[in-house]
Length: 110
Image (tube, rainbow, N blue to C red; front, side):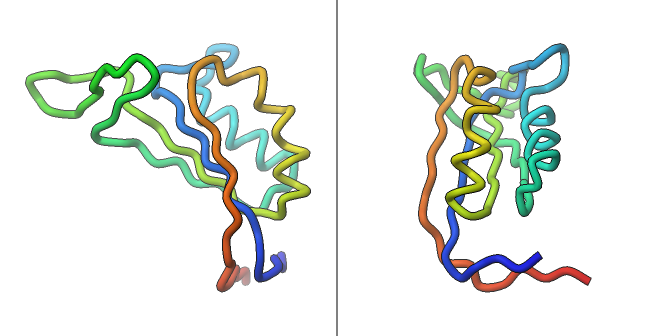
């Protein structure tokens, strides 16, 4: 797959315990991104964070949280990301979504 030098980054912040039809929401979003033919997706589990309710979520042993922050990053063209947005819009009950213009250096396949 060849991507242009200019692209966009879709970044989705949700909680680890968020679900869609019994499936972790981050997993559901990545599968939908793949179905839609987006270039790629990465999910990262945060070790510390807070959101709309200002509650600290941390991996510290004395205060284990079952709802760690999850960040999903998807890079592609703005057109494809905008087409993907309605797919996920109704699934994110509480979270944050950002779209940023980025420079793409390379994307390699075999």
